[in-house]
Length: 511
Image (tube, rainbow, N blue to C red; front, top):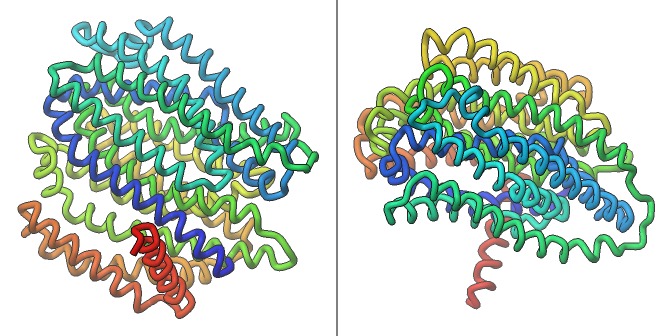
């Protein structure tokens, strides 16, 4: 990775991460009010609103993953015909498939409410309304995802991040305002539809405007539908596996336990899923750069880019995971209160450990996605999915939501280790010793030191103020030790990035 690309990589991820931190902070402040005002059972229905929408998105058959890949490739090669073909295929697959699936879900909402989610009679009528709202919103959300894929492929990460930030902030803000006005779950479902429809129309118009110059380029190589479909379907199969791993747990809980247990599990789990934005952003930024790697030393250049991305991702994510693991009991008690501070703690801690494996597998999957036939990624996701389902059926009757977390952690850990070994051996041709020395050593050592410093005194974090002190101390220990372990090139890159960021900020402020 050249110095220019390294700086561009860090800048794009940095701006994306800054925006997502703001969104996460806003959601953190509004979620306790929403949960307590809505009630744990009604909030369980609110979770099903988003879950049902995610089911429908599978009907796009992987087009959301194929779109940025081919948009980035044809933008780099200035192939206007290929860009036009990509836009046509992507828009059709995003729109038509989800529209058909949404019509089925909306018409058969009663069947899904009773047979799939096992809703009780007192929640049935509201549940049917919520499912139908999810069906309508999913159509607009799918077209919005098409626009996101185009923006990512064109590397307009600032615009993409701004839209995601607006969407993520307006959704809870609107729900909180409706609850404050005395409305309930049905009004929240209607707001979900209205927000997705409005963003779809506005962002879609802007995306088409940005596409016009790229589609007017002189290149005329084009893209066959078969090629686009083959690549998207491999990603769809992987997405189907991810769906089973990340969404079937909610079905198991709703069917086997209760809506209140679904809330106790899903609220902290949802917080951790927001943490996955970080690896997602790094992958989105790294993918177009890895696609561009070429030349006689392309394999070694790919290895260097891969290792730097691993260090960057672990360095950005590990200190927060260590703090979550250590301070989870006090955090949940202060944040949500009630049963969250007791019943949700141990399951959430296991899910935090699982996020380490999410970080570790992100860059290997990104490398695989740059290949022509990335079938290894769906194999990983299906290994995780089948392991999850098997363990959930075995453990939930005995351990409840703790059994869900145990199954999820095991399904993340074992397939991930095997997958990383395969990618290193078959694609990167890189020994584990180099991966450990150049990718894992520095961030893991700093995380271990942070844990040793924070954990022995974590019981003293009994208020938001003391928890903030622990967080500051933890980040200080982590990044202070990590700085000592970085090489000279990485230190120089960070200095230049901070210097350029400060200069840009001053220019924007007119200083």
